[in-house]
Image (cartoon, rainbow, N blue to C red; front, side):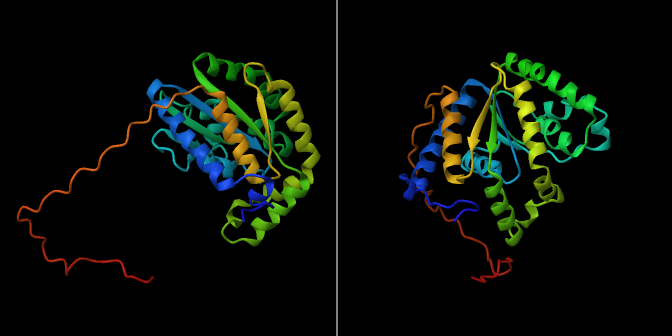
Length: 266
C-alpha cells in the first residue's frame, strides 16, 4: 500500500492500476503532440510537505521521454544566487520548444517557507507578491503554457505520513528539520498560502487545488485535469514491424572466457 493511502482504489469504485495506465497513455500522446507542435509547457507543483507532489510527478514522468520532459527541484540558493534577481535561477530552467518542465516547488518558495521561516525580508516578500503576477504574465505572453497546482492536505493526514516516513529507512531521507518544524507553524503556513492566493490566483495564471488526503485519487484527478487543459492530437507513430534477424554469414564469436561477468547472486 502506498504511503498515506488508505484504499486501493477498487473499494472506491475504480481500479487505480487500470485508470493510471489509461492516463499515462494519454500523457505519452500529449508529449508527442508537444514535440510535434513545439509547445512549451511548465507545470508548477506546490503544497505542504508530504502532500504528494513527488508522487504525482513520478507518475507523470514514468513513461515519458526524459529528453523532452524535465523535473526541476532546486536546492536552496547559493550565496551568489541570493544576490541575483529573485526569478533569475528559475528562468534558466523554463522549457524550450517541444519540452515539458515540471517544477517540484518553484519561485513560490518565497511566499511559503521563506516567508514563514524568516528566510526573506518583509520588503522582499512584498516585492514578490507584486512582481510574481507580472512575471507569470510575461511567461504566458511569450507562449509558455503555465499550469499551477496547490496540493492540499489535512493536518491529521500529514502527521500520519511524516511518521510513516520516519519509520521507513527508504523514505527517511525525504525528511528535514524544516519538515518537522513546519508542524509548529501550521497556521502561519495557512495564512501565507491564503495571502499568496489573493495576489497570484489570477485570471491569466490561476491556481488549481488538488485534495490529496487520498493519494491515489489525487494522482488520477491531477493528471486527468492537466490533460484536460491542453488540447492535443494523437500523433504517435504507427507500430513498426520487427525486421528479420540478420543471417549468420560466417561470423565467429571470440573466446569469452576472459570476460568479467556479474556474479549471479540471485
